Length: 380
Image (cartoon, rainbow, N blue to C red; front, top):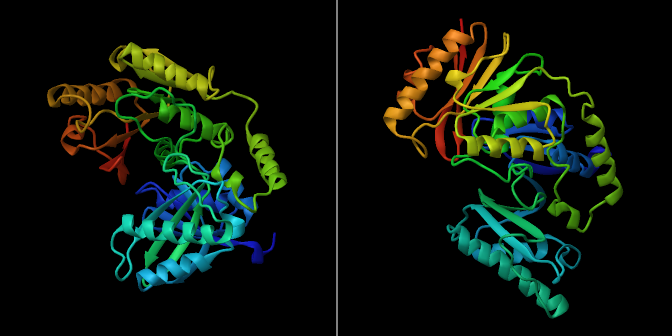
């Protein structure tokens, strides 16, 4: 498609993974990718937008910009929304919708009030056109509208996912403090692990890091087994969508010859959950989950990569237990993992000191609102 068919769009990304997110968008064909705070802007045609929904691992959401207009008041917002699109085409009363608002404008400082103003503009327009109106559905709407107010301008976008893209569909079972799948994928990308050496998670929990790593290595598209809100858009192109689905399926490696990917999990019930997640992701035979503490486990012959998201006291574990855990983890690495790389997600610097290891890199990331560091240690 030519440049004239491209529209502006935004990818909402985990904080700290903006650069990785930009690289991924660029590799999948997005144009003019620019990093923002917790996001990236880009331009795409429909084929590219479909591809990103099916194949991008890092975004929470992909927002397609539909209209923008000056907005200096409540009346500007109401009138601007009514004139923004051909609503006879884009919002039929049979379709449910929701509205999310970010940013502010003069007299428009509360997101709930702004969303109400947008809703009123839309349903008033519908009543004029059809004599009836859409219902609001906050959980599973047919159309998710997003309004951003900034510097006297309103930008109206459509969310193509219909639910956060981090939900891959394989994780019915989760531990008490789950790591979101897109954050896990971004953390794996940061390690540089390329599927040629063993990958071990000594505290694997629900196995999210291992599953995302295997999916990356096998080029298994994260969006193939779910539906998307964009399939109900007025300009949805089923043939183009089918082409991109086929393209995503054809990328997957047929051989499953990866080096060992192993998770250790002390809690038998959580280990069983992890095995269920691995099976749901179609990765049996690729990832092994061993029940028992890492303290009693053996690593495969190295070198390799250790990845770990141990508890850090915000949600799980007492201080004394956790200090012992980190101390034992450091000893395990020094005794068994000489020549390996260790990557550990830390939300507690005090606990991390108990490892008695010196970090080579400290990458700031946010995990569920907790300020964390993705720490890299070269074990010698």
